[in-house]
Image (cartoon, rainbow, N blue to C red):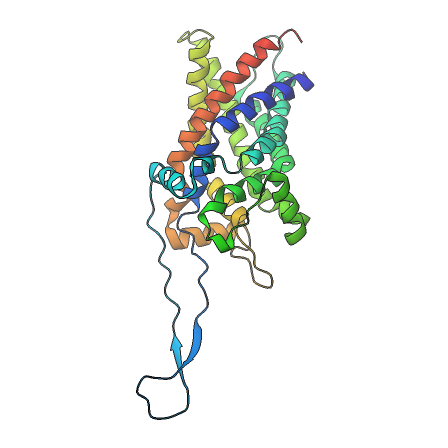
Length: 322
């Protein structure tokens, strides 16, 4: 109890985050599909009509071309398009931010959850009630998200940069460069943009992911369905990943859009907050827009959770004598 839980959780989280980063990038790109692009303002040009006999210029209003949103495509098509247009390396855009995010966010939440779990587990029965697991997950996830929000904002922006026109790209060189540029151009508070969403999502993910993993694992062992080993760890972790994906996807979509929005100087931001973003998204694209990117979310959340807990169990074995 103490530093050991943070070290074990941090190592497992970084490995899981890096190994599933391309799936997370595809998820972010899909969640941004359907956002109304910023169109250029209509222009008025002074043109002289052909074969006109008068000398005065005539004002002719040329309407701006209507911007048609690209058709929505699936995760495989999104991945292929990224590779074709930006190269294979683009699948790891923002991976430095992922490492920093896992170091700050996941290390904190995993360590705190482990501390609360050991504190609240009944010493006689060695059982922790599901309700306490959920509360521990909510507390650990909320604190971890508050700590890791700057890296989360940087990661979303770096992952989404490739979908913007070349003239509008931010072209961050690394997560440190992203945080530095955001602080200079948008203020330090921009590093915590969408923090309420990040905290809410992290509380949902941690409570559903960690609590359900422990619960599934205990149930499997209690009923004698499997022995405590790799099979049990994979089964429980994949089930936990599915639960976490279902619970967190709507908040994740809104979080992605709020963090990625580009605020032009002197202009109102596209979204005034989380509720405004949710209402505009539902109004423009329908309620199911909140589950955009669900396939890559579960495709990423499943493997991420499996790698996370399998790695965590192995790291615990290695460090059990420390």
